[in-house]
Amino acid sequence: MLPYSQYKDSKVNKKEFIEGLEKLGLDKAEYIILSGGSLLMRGLREKTSDYDLSPSKKLAEELDLKNCKTDAGGFYVPFENVQMKYDDENIPFDIVDGYKCESLESILEFKRKKRREKDLKDIKVIEEYLKNQ
Image (cartoon, rainbow, N blue to C red; front, side, top):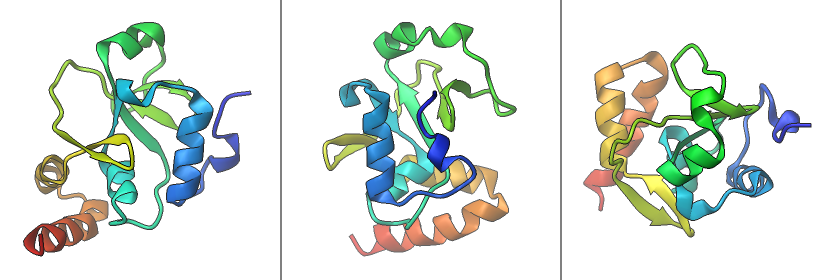
């Protein structure tokens, strides 16, 4: 059985998110938590519905990502409810509770470009948080 079956189509809090990551058994030095997960790890979001990660080249090879299925957005899906973006970009990150998390500036830039309905709240929260730092 694949990890995360208990979380499919539901949202998880930070504790559950970290538990889910640990169940994967991946070396946390070999991936970056992206977008909503990064916001969740920082306490800027209460829940998230999926695991968006950017693996290192080493991890991508271990998981054989090139041969994994992809979703509609072009993300690799090596595990249920886990999407991986792998394109050799240098994604800026900060260490949060021992995990590499995409920088807020990087998330904000992405969300400002997309400006999807679901991004508008995140944009406001990130801008407010950065203004007060």
